[in-house]
Length: 401
Image 1 (spheres, rainbow, N blue to C red):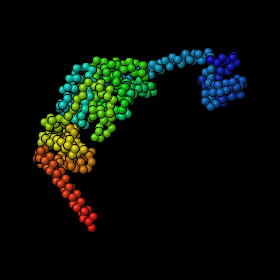
Image 2: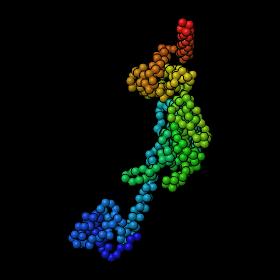
Image 3: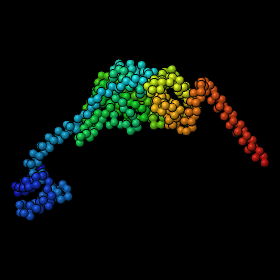
Image 4: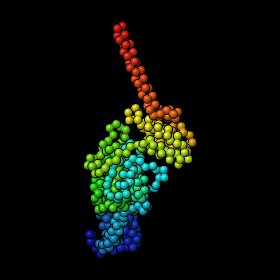
């Protein structure tokens, strides 16, 4: 605290009354000195009171400052309170029912867990596009349970999951992350593609134990409301992708994985169920065609069996078949629908897939196609062996010469 004498206090009062502010420039001081309103306050124009180049504070009188400080303290208190306002979701987050949905696989088990409202974390693993996320979404829709989906990436951290400070209407407020929102609402938390996460996901350890979590940034302990549960989906089992088919997936901490009591392995649906899925989507797209649905499923079945045997590196998922059905509804052309939906593959793969469909469309069975493929591969191997043998003989002749 700076003690001012009577003359100095008088100078401050004149400057404040004249300029109606808490700072003053050197030019403004000199103007009053020149008019002989005040004597030159060299003490004020020192570095002690300098707040900027040629600018000095007038808020240095102990009495005035005390009052000002009191006001400022009140303001800070108010601002601090505002800074801790938790902004929450106000909308209902129960997923909408998909009228085209056909349940299969682990759907019934997932639905029973969701309906139970018990805390029972679930890990669902399976190849891409086989309905893992859709099963959870539709189970919540049927059970009329709120669900908050959080898509995980390598960049996902505690701030993304639990929450952080955000700027809203010019004010800093605390905004809950999806995890805290789901806990406080008693909702299902869907952690999608969890095997893409880094070790930053470990902040969820206490939550996966069913206990609350202390959010240190707001000094608050959050307890889960009844009904809260965690369901995670992944293309792997959290052990990485050794074959490189799912680039970006990581090896998850064993202690983290151990906190999921059950793991469901989601397979592609049976041919009968998959035909029903595709037929339903074709009908919804205004192109009811059971034969096309049958051919698409047969085509996908051949590709999947070849994929399992290591014959191809790509696969046709159930989701890809649904995309083709939707494309057919838009373009009104089957082959165009197949072509535009297989353009994501490299040219050789795409062309072989399209060629394979023409064989299926001509009436060839899965067994016949696979047998023809096997014979073609054997003939190619024999041809290569014969070529190698001829090259070897030519080499020996050259050596004799």
